[in-house]
Image 1 (tube, rainbow, N blue to C red):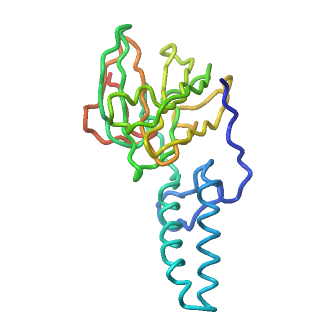
Image 2: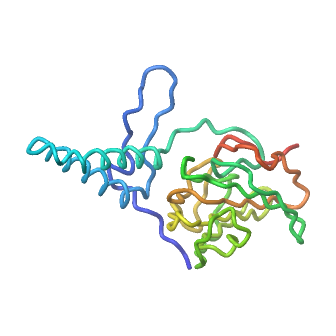
Image 3: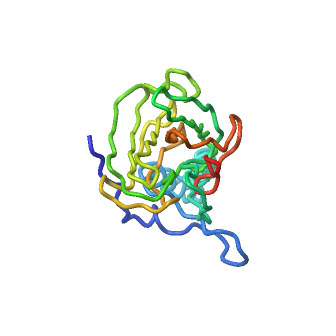
Length: 230
């Protein structure tokens, strides 16, 4: 079933956070699709903090609300990246969970995203999105071998290497996948294409003949780490 892209009209979703402009530190924004989670927690923190002026007892609610808001800021951060070169780059921040040879000659590279990772996923190659398909499923932890049957969004890209498949998989905590683009969209390598709220797993299928350039346990950075090698 085709997925419509998340709207990009909210100030909360797109405007910059308080990232310093001095020096070379990258600008950090709030990820698109974070509004349903971030806005209510921020409003609660602001309200309970204001009420502490009437009664100090409200601090019992204000302190955890502010802490939760700070956590949401961290969870949904979306830093700018200097995109690296290479045929296939990582679509996700995380750790390489497994590398599996597929019967059709492809190699699946599975990247586990913890709640502490950046949750925005990026296009592994430049090309045209040929399909974005939502598949219903369960919500077992992403490290479980049965997580292949979890709620997921299956992407296909028409690239210079042929058809490239990428799968965003929800987990026990991540229960919402938010694609940013539709089928038919041309994307650049490293372009933002979607969000998995609170992390989980992203699988990339390297075509037959493409050698894997990462190892199990290796940390990856979306748009930066190269998944293949020459």
